Image (cartoon, rainbow over all chains, first blue to last red; front, side, top):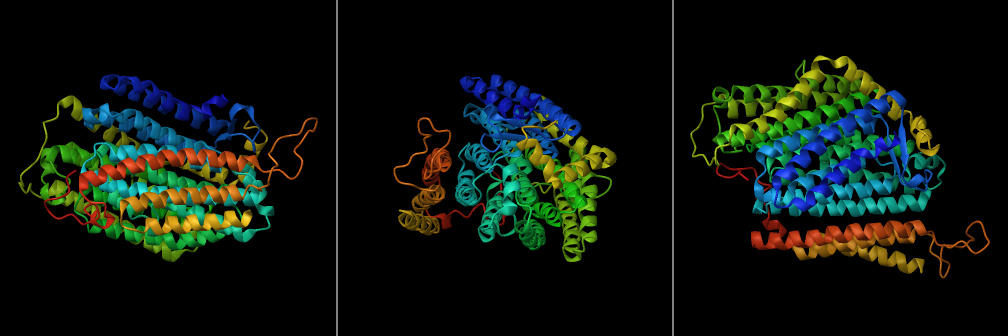
Length: 502
Length: 124
């Protein structure tokens, strides 16, 4: 059963390799992509069930024992993130059936998407900091190509910024890993967590901690490091920007969560959390204010990604079990709601010919189904009961009040209100007001079949949002157990170092 | 030897950051390369450098004898060089294509994705 841990990495890898010979036959690529995504969803569900029932699962590649070999670990946090990635991978492969043009398919759109999932799943499952770097690079190089694929001037501009900042942060990451190895003599996360408390050179460890925070902060788009995101995420086709918006920034958040609860446990983490308590409210506020100024639908949503990251950072910084559970639930909820909103922006573009809110309108009367789906996702994002975002925010804010951070909690509540305001803006502009009748540049009309491919993933994700919101009990159960397991570093360490995982 | 490495590492970091802050795409790519190498040199110098003492277990012995160079950082650098090479190759192609498509290599001129959209823009 231990091979199950490697399956989320191997499946998309083999799927991508299998697609390569079929450059001129996009139909084959599409079916392979779909099959691989369905298989990943099944594997992720099995992995989650296995880890939930049996505790942390560790795989030592090639049978080399823990601190020396390459370790793959699945604890509940990893398993939940892999499951979320599988869900988004599945919906995106359906969505791209209806929206990706043949030219992009010929230039290996589908294999690149699978390779990006290889990197994302690898980053979630690795038990070693250097391998985390490697998986980050796998994810990044595929995302670079996906972002630039098609080569319109706007895409290239966005890519230049995205590529530069990410290569820069990779260099910082590598430096941090180098210093950490010099200090501790190991890079295995479980081994590090055991050895770091005894290390003498505390100041070097603080340097490493801050360097890592900067690296992951760039990936997660936290407060002063987020400018690349709204400059690049709205340029590629919707299927690409949706999966970026949903998953990529959360890999950075996951890394922050993992490194500063599992690897660093002492004074260094405390210092990082004090920094995060300042960064979190600034991230929330700056993101939401940036969104308020925008009229381009996807740029508006891009700024909201930044704003929502603030809540997750706040949850990580509090570190109580309730906060971690809330933060984790927030991450999953946000992955689902944000991806859904990006898909909807694509459908709006298909229906009305523009992303610019000033040019569109009247969709409420022509597309009532779309309006309903938008309401579900947007209100979930703003945190209106009984949808998923409400519970996520409730948990984080309650944890904030319990730990006495009333200022940040106040900021979180205010930002919720502003989020609702900008969701209302989209609603008013795109759905409610009359169609302004500006000249439309609609492409060829879509067939019903392709339209169904666009609606299906949105409906699926809205179903998940409703499920999270309405039957909250089991979801709370899962996030509480995940938080308990994450804070209990001993079980993680045992599973990895004793070759175990019962 | 260690002093020389430290100097070179510092020089690479400085050159890398200086070049990245220039506005021309060509200088940015050179800056990224310098930064990648700076990180590699940093890892290299953490690896207990020794002269003429490779990490081989001598015949008959059970373990390495001091002093020996730690082989792991070198393995890490090898991986990092390969990854860095791939990324840099991609970046060069991307920057070249951007130059052809946008007609400029001045990063300050690439502002259209940053601006708040006016009516008339905004469609990819």
